[in-house]
Image (cartoon, rainbow, N blue to C red; front, side, top):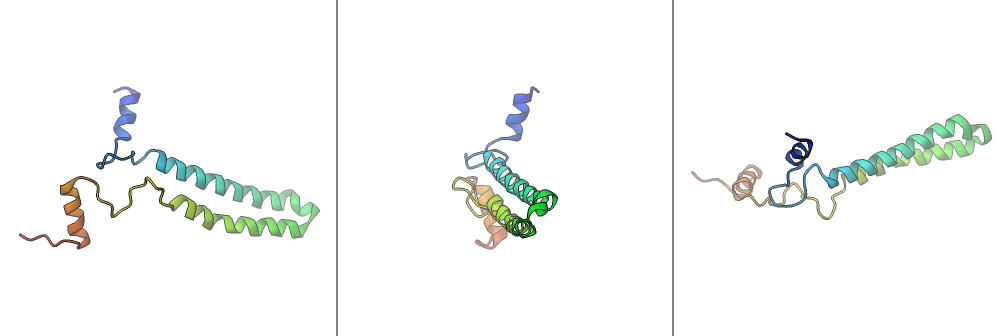
Length: 111
């Protein structure tokens, strides 16, 4: 199997015909999360390695800003995009949707 076929197998489209599960959606979220967390780490390290030599107040201010970034990064990384499939959206596969509805208690399966 060539590399392209392997990538297509891994990045197969979701049952509803939407975008791939492991595609742009997760890459965008990871990229945003790591950029924000990298900025947080940069602020914290720079505050106590060289900014403190000039101004302790500025170093503390940088640490306060760095302290606010991780919750924001988590919210950005977990935000639902306009094209993202949410957990309760129908997948397009009637049998799978019926099974999930039964599990969620939306419809009772009658034997």
